[in-house]
Length: 111
Length: 117
Image 1 (cartoon, each protein chain N blue to C red):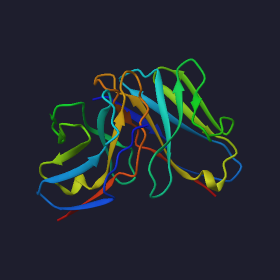
Image 2: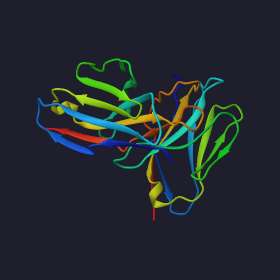
Image 3: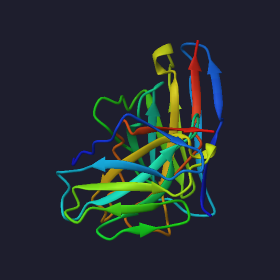
Image 4: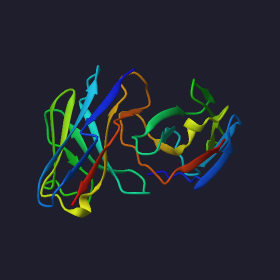
């Protein structure tokens, strides 16, 4: 499985933008880049996913490097409710539902 | 939107007893569901894939006779931890494929915390 590398932890001030990086240098041409987050004592929550182009939704934006070897999840204004572990996961799609979770990045939001 | 529920949210049991955890997809059908286990301060580890109407597929190292999975309907999968021991204490989470989005995204349940005394 193609692997991802994320910083163990990051901090952000409340109401500031947050850029969460993810390296995936061995990504294949058909791998989708998924982001999930897990709040304390809860199951993971889907955030966003993309293939090649940058993506926006109500929760976040996903910026994908041109060579696709890295991506950045952008939270435009961090709130205390965004404090969670964020997971960057590669998935080949095409009916392959299995997700392999790495260690993720623990985001702390400072009031 | 689509939701996955789990019951119970937490359970405490004595060593040697069996515990059943339910995972339900609300307002959508799921022919496939997944069961994960998460130990404190660790990441999620996939245990098995639950398939409606057929046998579950277990990941390497997961004992199928200990973790019984039954996917009896298109909205319900159950995980039974048989003869539970303290080392089985963990956070168990299920998921189901999102019926709306492409690229195989998933909805996750809120998790069930199992404590075996």
